[in-house]
Image (cartoon, rainbow, N blue to C red; front, side):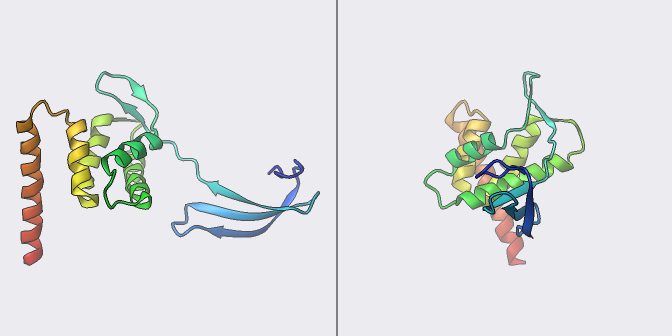
Length: 160
């Protein structure tokens, strides 16, 4: 690890800790040349499958692209950045568990559509209107009916 202060390559690790999810290792280091201390973060590099778009193009998974889309859907809603990050983490876990080198983008879109109502129903409607490309108000209303019906079913299950 190169010292950010003097550029020397020799240093020693003073302290190591895992984050709460045990996915990132935080290390405090001390440069053996200038004695300055600095922190590094180590994260396992995960290879995600390629996304296969409707037109057959293949695209590398881009976490930031999904975060931006969800931030737009959740704009002016009581959804924190941490909630969005956690949501995308869950999608990435599904991608890792998919067990293939390629995954249709529609599959990922359906995962989002399935889980987004739990995060925020208004964000779900916003996302669905773009994702499903509604052509008229009737298609939009049909999607709202599905959402309301599933909410009613959940309420009925919680009663019993």
